Image 1 (tube, rainbow, N blue to C red):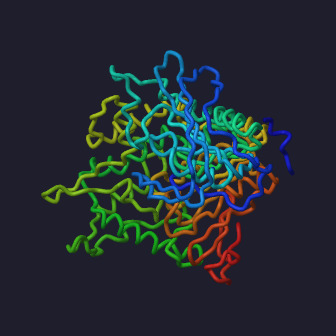
Image 2 (image 1 turned 30 degrees about the horizontal axis):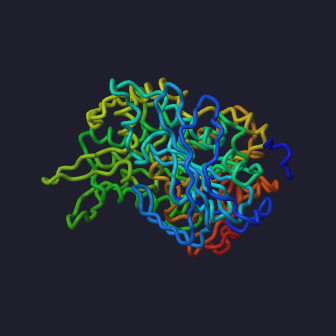
Image 3 (image 1 turned 120 degrees about the vertical axis):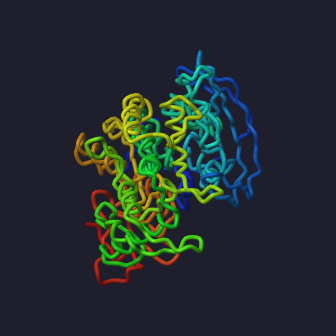
Length: 525
């Protein structure tokens, strides 16, 4: 359906539910039968099979995953789950697309769920939550395993890249799932989808930006949080802490890493006028880790004195990777974020420390760059790290980089893009998203008419952390798309505080007078 006639003026890891929104059209009074149907293949693909299964709904439980907690969703209406398997001639792939369709209460909307790490989609809680919230849900596995960190699928037996699967994972499968989801919903409900939305974080965020860049007509609204854009840089840059410690032959115990984090928070927290354990602007935090040299901290019952070497390693980790001339290649870990995720160490039986490295970055280097699944990334020199960084950009920026700043087609289509990034994101440093946004503005000028980015102080990767968590950003996106209400701020809260997040380039600032636990005491500047 063309968006032009709709003008009225998204584990993530943890998808955020849409509640209390007026349906676009009344739901059917009689549930259609849950049965197989003839699904139209997207161009360049062939349908292998279509299966349908009815689910009673009620309370639906999901076990914990390596990247998320267990979930239980209550009061789910009965729904039909349609699984479509497709292939691309000559590719030898088998891609599954799952579509969930509520028997009652359909709002006319479609919601697509994104993936995490090296998993392209989520076949669990997001699809059931979508049904509960009145959406038809859709996701895809891109023909690769749903195991998050497995990259073996990307190599053929002769250790060359499996280009069809890489293409699926990078761009093609999300687009095809949007096409199939709309087709299945149309056949089941006997009318076209009124509005389509993307909801994803991390890899799901990258996928959302990819859709805006490459398939601007797929979704009316894209919620893409903590997006792993500039993937070809990010996927190598997050190996920097391991490279630093291995090359400097100095490993920081996790308690020492935490001591530096806490010291940075203590030093920079007051800059925003409120002492609340949050560094609102890590980019403006000038804390020098050498200030902690000589401090004594307790680690596993033993007293450790922070050394100059400790401070030097922490400084390099915060600064991020540089080239041979000292020029910045990419942003480092933000001050105030938990460094143990990217820089964490482990001890052997003799107490000797080593840095295993961020698993996503290790898998990228081993499989996509070195094409040696057993390659030991701890052996990389600074020079080899820089060579791999440049190789990654050279070979993969056009494949999976998701760095094209030209969003003009998405703007012209009437689409809306909404994102938030946590200033304490410990896995995807927010500097990459900010740099991309700046590139878009340099290319297109002011873009807040269709693209709004919100910084969430103290929020970690996708969710969590000490900062107020964004409240129902998908609902804000729906209001923007369907009612023309562009979000001037994005509501956020903890159990005891509220705060309104500000659209970039503006930042939330305490007024110096009101209750610092109440959103009205902050303004955007």
